Image (cartoon, rainbow, N blue to C red; front, side):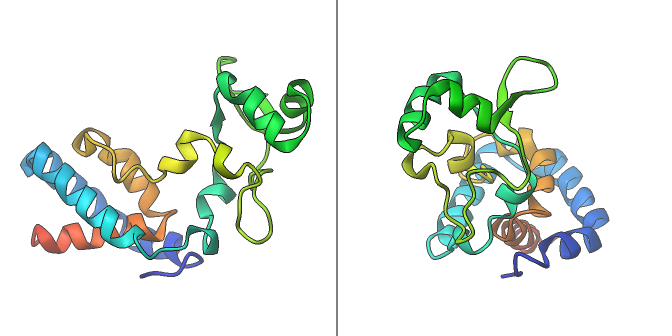
Amino acid sequence: MVSPDKVAEMAERKENKNNKFRAYLKNHADAEKLDAQFLRLHNELFKDYDCSKCRNCCKIYCTEIERSDFEKDASHLGISVEEFVDRYLKLDTYGVSYITKHKPCDFLQKNGECILGDCKPESCMNYPYTNQPERLQSLLSFMEHVAVCPVAYEICERLKREYNFR
């Protein structure tokens, strides 16, 4: 598998081919079969992958924190909800959702662990969403993840082989 520090470079080299592959899938893939392929590869590759050795996603994305999680997250950190919001969050561009203030994420520790532990946002727990249904409808965002996540990159490469895409 490609190393976390090389995944962006490797994906950039293959960007044109990956975009052509995305178009190919859009026009030729069966949605249910593709979901099953993604799920199988996701389970196979994440089974032994230690995300804490990478955390590219934590380094380049801001994540949304649901308002319903503020109290739980603040309590986990031993601070008030007001302090939690003030210290870690800001409103998104549209003024609708709260997202983390900084990149890398303020919750990311030097050892690769998240200080939120089991309170980690659902969007973080599900990234890169390769085990979620309806992959055919979200191939554009998947191609963005290929440049961030070594597992997503590997899934893309294996899918190209499975579809005999050249």
